Length: 221
Length: 178
Image (cartoon, rainbow over all chains, first blue to last red; front, top):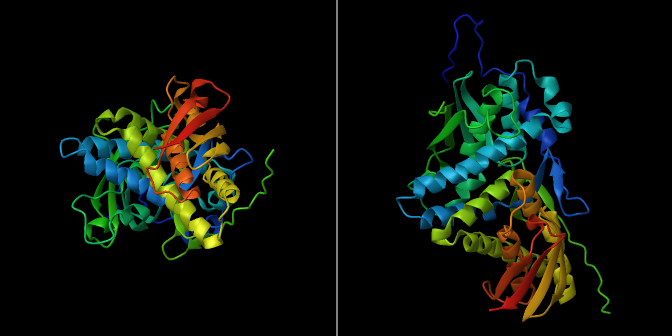
């Protein structure tokens, strides 16, 4: 695992070393039971949360990308990633400013924003989006995430796909880097959002042992 | 006036520490937010080439048809009243809003939402709009009617006639057998 320093004037540190106790975070936050209120809504983290079968999200993405045809598949994939990118940015901010975060994760944070990033992936794991962790981090520049189990891989029950399809993880991983290094959070999404982009380089759905996601500065910035 | 008893939905929540997945009543569940749901709805709305609205509604119909059928079978839920009550509770459990089936038969029905995740999420994100956006809600209702009346999927057509996203107090849907 390569860890490089962005700026030689900054005292050297290993961005993979963290004071976040990942096991403890997962153990604590995986127990959280999300319940709707008397209106059938789940207002939390400054958003309305929904709690739906993973099969629903997979089916829509799968049917859409299979039907658009080769000329439009990249555009369709971008839109699916973008949905997760915006979700990850706004909900991610809501999570890292929530009472749950303050109670469990914040006391473990010693280095900002790197520990927050490590903590965010522990939460990402605890709440069932993907069993994932950061395996390479160059502050302000690049992050590599590995996911060892994720629901988006369930689109394959037999054999392997020719194209990876973890659009949600791609979007959320980029969003977390936006929150860490993209400037102050902007609720309007005008600034801060999409300063990073993510490419999926490996996928369980493609026959790899794990999914791998490389986040870099957006080419538009 | 018909008297109905309410059957309470049994919720079996589990977390698998090996895979780090959450399940409710045996099905893998995942949390997302209104940004995600509304952007999927917008994508469906924009995708005229494939009739994305129909696609999103059908995916929802298929998903919840399976969920409800499995729930009815596992718990021996056989009366129309109980099945409708369970469907309404599943809608709320999913955070999709408060659904009330005003009337229902194997031929038709009327459904009202007093709150709606998709509509209120859309307003929160982009503001009001004239056209309905709750394709997820339409699909849920179609799947629920099929499950309640032991019909296959695509047995019902659902039309949203009034929408919270357009400024109405409630969303209303009319259901008719195809």
